[in-house]
Image 1 (cartoon, rainbow, N blue to C red):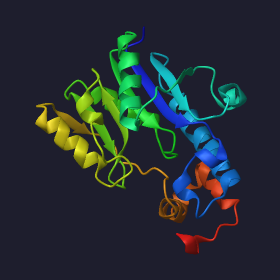
Image 2 (image 1 turned 30 degrees about the horizontal axis):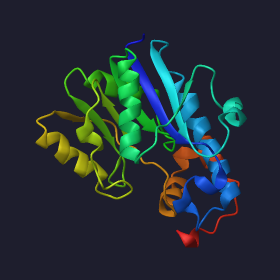
Image 3 (image 1 turned 60 degrees about the vertical axis):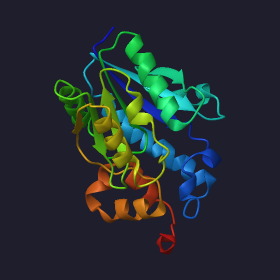
Length: 223
């Protein structure tokens, strides 16, 4: 078993099920296309991780995973997410991978098109000094969590989907007497404002996500 493992958490790109907070701006078909574009950006970056890193795609949704395998690198190990809240599902995935023999695990979402594989390697390295590593997102959450043992404290929150997710996790980690390191900050794409801000940065033009959004006739007054 390899020392490091990366878990990507994602819904299958079924239009009416993904990125529902973008519904005022994007219809079902457009949200499906956006998810596939973000998949491309995230997947093409994380496969740059050394072969010593095992990569898992933990998926959920009503679609058939076989319909999407053409978009997924063969290197990925496919697993279905467990039942329960987001926190429960993330904890279960991390615990399962650690119990399989991996020494360090990082978990990310699939909606961070500006991700760099170096950021993940940085998080793994930080675990030499911290019990848990979180990488903040600009909306008050976090886009990455990494740990060497499954920590309930990180996921014991009723703040999912709010601007206090990171702060809640920090308090829980501190109260448990654990140490926390903060890694590279990135933004994920959850809301129309996120899309608008992402498209303002011309430096993002290299991503498939930027090119896809630019191809749409969007009404940014909705942002």
